[in-house]
Length: 352
Image (cartoon, rainbow, N blue to C red):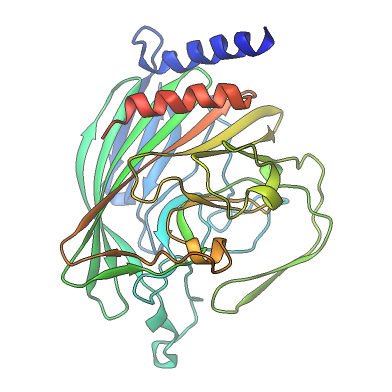
């Protein structure tokens, strides 16, 4: 009986997104001089699409709940007491990858690295090129943008065209990213790497509690030492569609969705990432770390399977691939059954 009530409740909650009478105004406001577009729900900031000159890729910053609570980490864009200061390339929410034809678009080089050291030749950047579509409305708004993936020699290896839908209803904020990648005049190989792809770096209270000092090392061997932090109020929990709980069970596994739940400044919060059956590598692998990195990685099979499977996903010159993901931010708690209903709603709303 309890399960049935949960299902009925969640179905009603999901339907709110499409019911005009309950829908909220979602408006995208462009500020060209700031190089960002702000997404407002009933006049309040939900997130911004930003492409500032000093960033190596466009990001969505910050992400907020329907009550205005920020669920993404502030560092390195702002200082927030108690937050970790590791992995400065983990900025709010983004899409990129750690190995494109041997070039790293995930990590970023230190600002003081000189080109004559050869270090910069290992890193690529993603440059915003155009805003193609802005549509505002009740319950949802749509943003169409184009980005260029630029290799160290300045050549364009890939074009990214995104349709981003921002949806809002009571207790819900949703971002749908429909990402079309087009190889240019060279073959594009997504060499298997754990570093990718659709990612969120969450605020401290959504991390798993940690009792030990840690050293994080990126795939270039650069260590970042992180001391023991205060675990008060830190209680994030991962849950996958396959019933895997916590980083130890969920990391590197395949699943159609993953949630991260906890309490942020007194508000119960669930963040979910949904993978879509039409995606070429569905169901995705999960690069879900207890220290707050929450990422869906469609490409990193070799690292996640300890070499049992290798993908090296490849686009031939001129070939396209489209990936569809939903980021959902729910104010309140969600059961696995309730999340399944919301996932079904995603499939009904994103069909191609």
